[in-house]
Image (cartoon, rainbow, N blue to C red; front, side, top):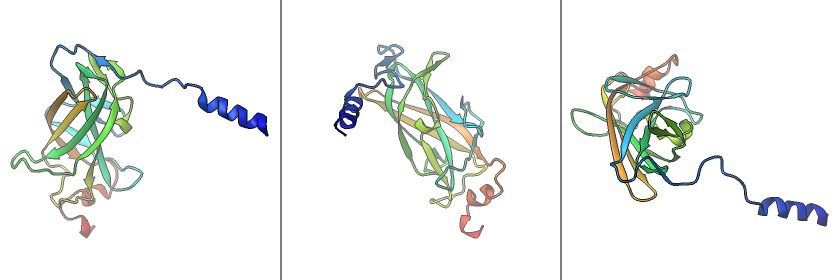
Length: 181
């Protein structure tokens, strides 16, 4: 028994290697923070967003529908907090609630550092629509704000349209009257 306890103590006291590099500057800290809006497709792969792109509404394990979207970035600390929401371009009012996630930007692609997966991007809660405005097929602005652990901040915005995939309940739950589904 004493041998088992000693083995467990030794195991838990040994330093573990992190799967991600330690926090530190990616890019050039003397330059302005540069952000690239990104989102997940239906297969969970992250890709860059451009004005006019569609955002896939996806069903997370907890139910409803979310949009996995955030930013790839450079010229800041790789350890940051990312917050995202959809905004009505006409009124400037929120179309969704805000979600924020800690992220470790580890994968470099074309000069930007990306989060390793969708779990380190905000999961924007889109449906059922708590704000009762309906987001599906509606023009919106994806707004992403970041702050790294050194206090550097940035904002990225891109015009997008949230769309449903193959899930038949998406159009109703993400429309303006989700209680009538």
